[in-house]
Image (cartoon, rainbow, N blue to C red; front, side, top):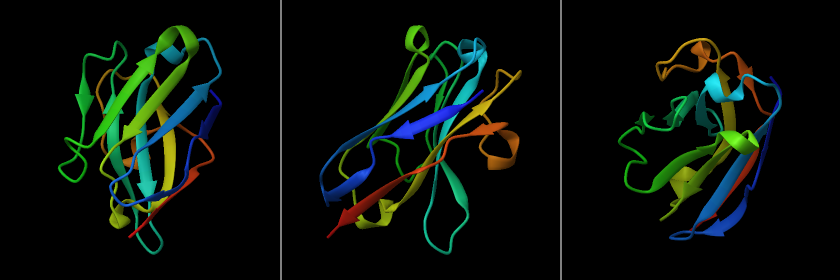
Length: 124
């Protein structure tokens, strides 16, 4: 599986961005997909996860109510809509695929494939 993330950029606080992650490979629709972020000097943390059918979704408290994850299995793409962005959301955002398991893992180490990352900068 190869993942290509896009959509990052510079946005003012309170604004919105939509990230996309295009995946190659026939198994996309059976992969749990996650979005993670890593700020300078910090570890990689999950911001959203979505199960195979899109019916199972996870958000940590830090983004719940502001971020929305979705997927289009016909287009092998997963999205992250980010609203009400704040400076603390500034980070490199990565999409990731978890192969062969139906549960959404929250640890980066439980994902098998990673995109290259896209930088999101939120100015105050």
